[in-house]
Length: 350
Figure 1 (cartoon, rainbow, N blue to C red):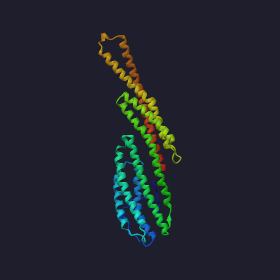
Figure 2: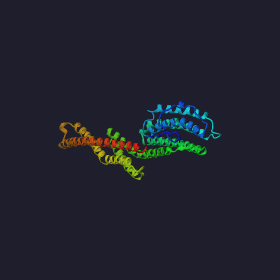
Figure 3: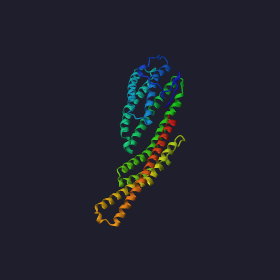
Figure 4: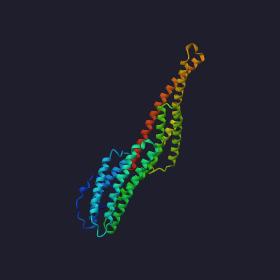
């Protein structure tokens, strides 16, 4: 997501540099002055930082952590090797703070990757099952990103402190990238807020579809009413959510989904509900009609039976038409939502 040019002078270690380099590849350096001493640590941890960002940003954008767990395991190995290497380094003229902060960053990163992202992997397996599960999953990702940023900030502050105390000139290019990292966390937090509003209604619609598939009239009635409540609540929450980066596109796409769900709950689901009610009525009339002997059937019985047939056949046509229309609208709206999310994240979290 972030591309950084590595300069000859000292560069702050807030950000992630591209290129996978094993910690074992760091060569011994001349550390006779403060600048080369800092360079020793920069060359030790910056390649790992790049891969940390690459991994964590992929997970934040929705990449399944389980599918890229091999990368997490490789990172854990590099972090462990890096920690041992950094811990062996000498202090600088009695100043141990920079070395110790690098070691602390490496330790903290291992904890975040092992414990927090291990938990994220477990949560993502059940996230789609309920709103509460999804909320816990997104919160875990959000907290992991925050902890990563806090650790990077602490390392950056110590690097600046050491440079000032030892008259080392720094190239402040990482300040710009550091702001990108901070902005990305804000973007993902904003995305999580919008996504949970969307997901609450999305999941409720799934329950409604299950009820329709089961042809459960009572469940259809209950779930369509809940969908209406959640979608209207969602629109209210979206209006109250402050737009980030002056770009309302993702919020507008979520609102379009809420409008679709409101229409589905108020109108479309009622058509489908009417069909199942007419089907249920027809089956009762048919059973009663066929239970009577032909000689016992009255004109009223025949008229009632024929009317039930006509109503049912008409309802079938309405059901098929509405179901096809509903499926097409759902597919189109979900596609627009996914595109809006991808475009927003690519623009503001890259």
